[in-house]
Image 1 (tube, one colour):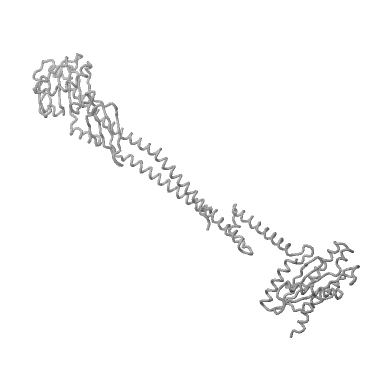
Image 2 (image 1 turned 60 degrees about the vertical axis):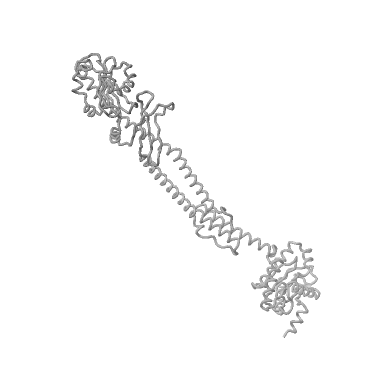
Length: 530
């Protein structure tokens, strides 16, 4: 069983999965360290803009108070009243409905020395009071006068507006009292205070469309001006402090804002992120599919073919689909096919060299012994006879000594050709098994038929009349042949058969050479056979 991740497909899948994970990690890091800070900063800017709108709405209310206080302060009747010239001014103008119409808590008239001339307003129990001084029942106005001291001491007669955090949340406006259409010094000052009541804050919510609240806040050492707290995925709490009187107090704007802008941007980014992820996954799948179909599948086919080459004999043909390719894999397949063909050719040549005599081209002893074993095994199974010839050239040493080894080699080649021509049957195998010794395998051949073929071969060689001047037997080259046969009821193995043929050859030499002799025992047995 192959070890995991040894195939290219597994490695490519692992590599692509790694690339995908790195891409997702990069997207997450970009989202966390690049996109999210931008979205949160945009959300903070949005919250700041909403608080700016609240401040602008409050500034608009202060501007309205500026116009109201100037209308009253620059009125001749008011100017004369502060100078003590119009005592009927109070009964004609300073009554409860006037303050309710103007939505005021206090109207405070001061002379040029910043002393109260008249106080009109609502006390802590919302009771309307009108007095000439801070004596009862207008003692409540003393806190407003104390708050005014920094403004009064500045000797600034221009119209001023501010926010007050004590004794209650309120808007205040103060202007010098002047005669209209005349350039004259201020006769005194007029202060108006409008409470930032629950109803006024509700009206501010309706005007701005923001869920807000205003609170008095002690000034602390941190000096935090603005803050933002994300309460949930859909809501956030924004706060901002603004200057007010007295100096140790601030007014804090608290707004509960929707996070729709952030959520919309976040959803857009998520959609882009999902879309990018989807495109990335699809791209990687397409790449993997292309890699599988173009590279990996042909390589697996090529790998299976190479494995079959080792297991099958003869080797299979290279798949045509690989040979038709015009890319690197096709070139590899063609080169491998040519290399395999060359290897087969070389193997066949090597096998031929290992089984044949290099001089005569006949089979050598190795091939002869192999074929003899196969023939004997077949004969044992079928009951047929197997015969063998052992051939020796008469006085070949004298031939070499007289004519030389080169002529001796030519003689061997000529005799080998004669054997191949005379013993042309595909079932007959002629082999050179020694220097001047040859052996012939005759499957399915009886002893008598083998003797006839041997005699015929001897005569054919004799007819060649190759000169042999030093031979005591004849003036030409002759051979002696021993014949033996193997029968299922007789000889059982190759060694015994060849020993019998060798004995017959020895007998032929003893009887004068240039003759054919069979093994005497086998000839006698063949004669006695029915």
